[in-house]
Length: 387
Length: 245
Image (tube, rainbow over all chains, first blue to last red; front, side, top):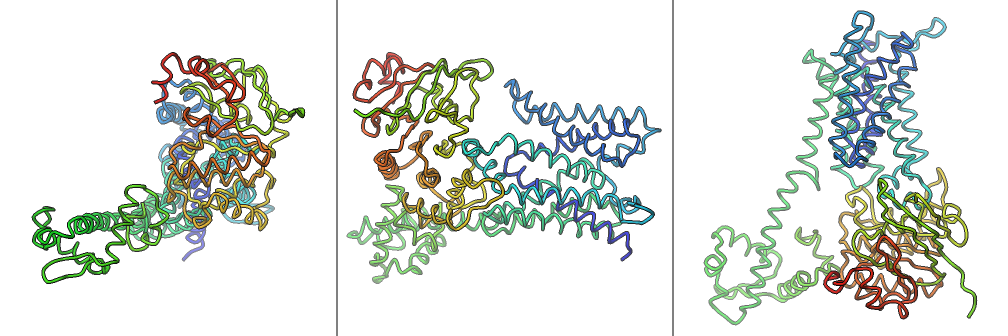
């Protein structure tokens, strides 16, 4: 592995980590699309900044771009406040406008600017190591690593300093305001950090893919944990993993690095969505199947309970006819009851055991009162009671 | 009778959203130690009134004082229970963590809740009978349990005034009784309670003071003096008996 290769991977990993942290809060605040808006409209800030400074690497560019990002939010909120349109429409109105002004400015001055629309959209990580940070004749590494590193440090520092404030303003802005933690300040704080992060990542991955880096790791982590700290940790892990595996995918396919990174984000999300133990697709299909058969079990037990004195009603063949179940389904219901020792067989008749009677009573009570204090112990064995 | 202190005083308060007044020139004195319901039809500005008391909504005119001082100087004396529906219960956090948020106001910047705060949170959960659910993810709690967690969070604030927005909404009968009992206990300890309430039938049973609100203040005072047909009609219109069902 050459030096450039290692540097590209480090830059990609730092970009991914820096994007994942604010991304978690955007996802939890249901503001994922805001990152899309910011990532496009900052182009205007970058172009205007370039006109002023004539230097693509001036810190003023980052600052101006971040200001444009925050301006986007302010404009979206202003339009929203008119109540004429909803938030998504307001977002759709604002960022294309700012972005297109940026595009016009670039195309009008295409000869003077070392910026083209293609790289604006998808970025070019492969060139990042060529732009060095030279200080006093010393080569201190790629410039973009310094920029993104600084942004990552800012992100991590704000997270550590303001974790509880970010948490409470995200979860319950009403309470936060009442105890003196201004939701407004943290809203704009988060918007500013997001804007700066997006501006920094823009160079590496472009306007479209930076959205994926912010949203996908957080969305994936959300499927796996019910703890905010873990969610942030997992999001960073997924971001970095996608970045590095994406780099190698691009290497073998000889294709775009940013495109491959985003593809890996998608793949990791898909795998997680399929296999997550609680919220995943397979788990949820399994749970629905279980719940269905458990409902049938309860119907069956209640039936036995209600018709305990009628011989005919307690025959297996009767179940199929009266419940309109197939033989196979009826068998699996009876099996489930038998496995839990809720029924016993008296010849070809079925009767409730004591355990079966207790279970039926508790279930009936739960269905009628919807109070789950007494069925807590059943939640382990039966999906139905887990809500 | 000893001279009573005023817990919350609202003077000439007007709040408007987009220049449309939702609260119009409200004057209100809430004496310390009362258990007061705020009632009124939908859109009467009940939630807005308590949000204005809490400095969450900025009025276009008038002001609010808590024990004679502006709210922002008295934050630690006030606990707020927002509407249960105002938060996303799928947020990745647990019951005890939500209760701990009640301590954030006194902690100050940077500091995290420590042992002392954890102990207080556990005690509060115990009081609302939710100790066994402390580590449960909040989306896995029933509506009544979620409301109890919110109440525990207010208890942990150990305030003098408790302001609650529809704490009985969407809770089961057992939880409702449990919450009422805790509120009555708080009042016995000399706390002041201000509760936005929807169910007119239980007002005389649960509360000792009431404020009728419909954009303007209709009446405020002890239940026994002012909870009558006249005020109900003024607040809800001539068909109030139909309207409240």
